[in-house]
Image (cartoon, rainbow, N blue to C red; front, side, top):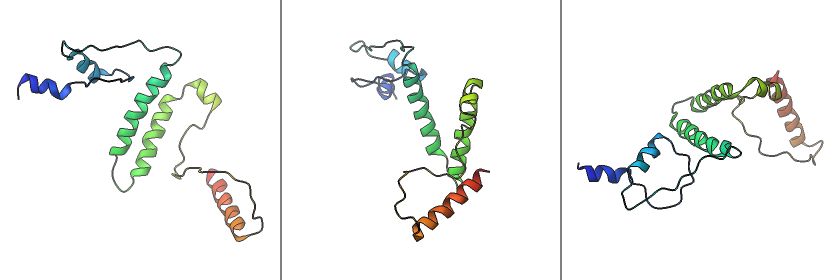
Length: 137
């Protein structure tokens, strides 16, 4: 493979990016041809958390999607909880002492008013609530 075709593998197409510059992207910017230029700006301290969390979130999403196996969700939760432990400063622990994802692997989808008190659905809901609260303790 020639040098010019190697460079084409890393070529950045023209366009708007608004993305954090990591080491790989920095190298691609350095390799821009003389007919192109890059517009960059320093992170704004008031908004840096947004760009940084997008980057880390994207990297985490990629890593989570690569996990395979019978216990994929358990592995994903363990990885996320390990990251959350690293992220918790002493100040954060005093505000949110239990920042971790439940091993139950569930999402809260909604909370609604109970309109069917006394029905079978209401009884099933109460049973689910009892199970949930007993699992917490």
